[in-house]
Amino acid sequence: MFTKILLATDGSPDAERALAYARDLAIQDKALVFVVSTFPPVPGQLGNPWYDRWIVSNMSKSEKVAKEAAEKLRKAGAEAVVEVLEGPPADAILRVADSQKCDLIIMGTRGHGALVSLLLGSVSHRVLSQARVPVLVLKNGQAKIH
Ligand code: ATP
Ligand code: MG
Picture 1 (cartoon, protein in one colour):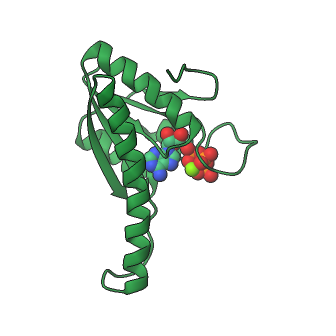
Picture 2 (picture 1 turned 60 degrees about the horizontal axis):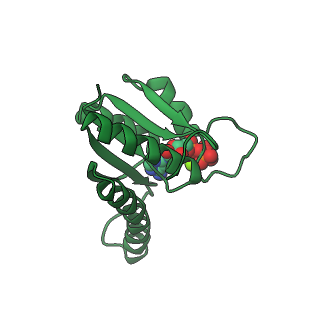
């Protein structure tokens, strides 16, 4: 049923649950998974040593999260592509979903944010409000990790 699935991950426990669903659906439907992880934008200019260090450090954190997720998917037999992008996460997720013509977005309810009382984080809230394709949102206890 699905051909291209976007998995948004910040490496949080809810995103790991999302990964488990993306993995099982991708294997079942022989779908390609786009693993999206973003790092926050910062005003500044390339060439400024402080800025360069900041960008490189954040980019490599996101890259690690995305690559580890893609590796788990591939080990399970799913095809995965890594997309590490700068920007507010929801914008980047929606942009990739459009440009790659994904037919499903899978993500966690919450991420690493600190406000435990909120049901949805700001990223899942924005993606749910603006996505043009179905969004599967996982929270604690909603999927087996293994
Ligand atoms: P907030 O960020 O608003 O403080 P939060 O961190 O608890 O709240 P979200 O950031 O909305 O919640 O996270 C919900 C889901 O969105 C995560 O489980 C993950 O799937 C996705 N997500 C969050 N941040 C990123 C990111 N930087 N890159 C890719 N996906 C992300
Ligand atoms: Mg967050």
